[in-house]
Structures are given as C-alpha cells and as structure tokens.
Image (cartoon, rainbow, N blue to C red; front, side):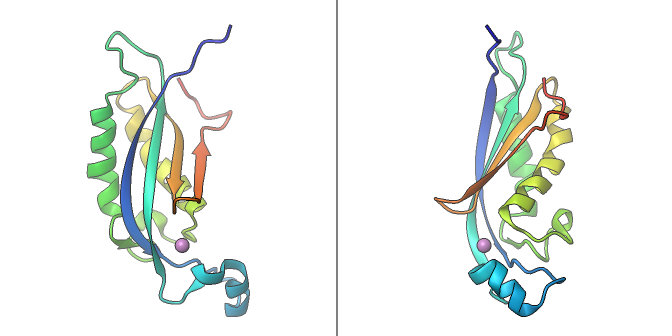
Length: 147
Ligand code: NI
C-alpha cells in the first residue's frame, strides 16, 4: 500500500484590480481574446488564495505550523497584493499578464523558498479563486522536490 500523503492548507482573501491586455496584440485582438477583462480601466476581483503544504508528520504532529503559514501569507505576501492594481503596483508581477494562472504561478515562486525554510514541508499546491465559479491550481511538477 502506498503511504498516505498529508497536506495542510491555509486560505486568505485579497481584493485587487487588473486588466488583461497583451501589448503584443492590437486593441481589437485584445478585446476578442480577453472580452470584458480587457476593459481599459481595469476591474476588480475578491480573490481567495489557498496554499497547500505537504510533508512528513514529525513528532510535533504538524506538517508545518499553520500559524507560520498564516503569518507568511498575511504578513509577507498579502500586503503586496491586497487593494493593489496587479498590472501596476506589484513588482513580482511586472511584465506579466495578470490572468489567474499567471498570478498563481508568480505566487508559487514567491512562497516556495520561504515555506521550505521552515523545515521539511514543501509547497505542494496553490489554488487561486477569482470568483465563486472560477479558479486555477498550480501543483508541484514531477521535477519539483516535495517531501
Ligand atoms: Ni478579471
């Protein structure tokens, strides 16, 4: 029997605005591709960010202290995203078209090392909900070392 894998998760919300627009395309092509999300002055979302961490269950009984994960998200990450315009205000999103996929990938890069610094647990999944019905997930790939 394969060993069960244990994941813990913490979720936080943030509000941000964005505009989906590819400068390599014409205005008409952008409107056709991104529709309402190409609105010139942007639009907002209440995002829900869920961060999953995977690892062995040590003597403490905790894959990672959820308080540490919560603090990392609340104190280090969210102040850089909450009530920001994702096209203009966030250095780690610079030059990126802020689709949910791209935002989640960029958040992955921001959180991967800080999470690993706490011990053996590793970032395993990020789920970013842009609305109740729409979300994206980024998962550790086969070459990503997970505990
Ligand atoms: Ni949008």
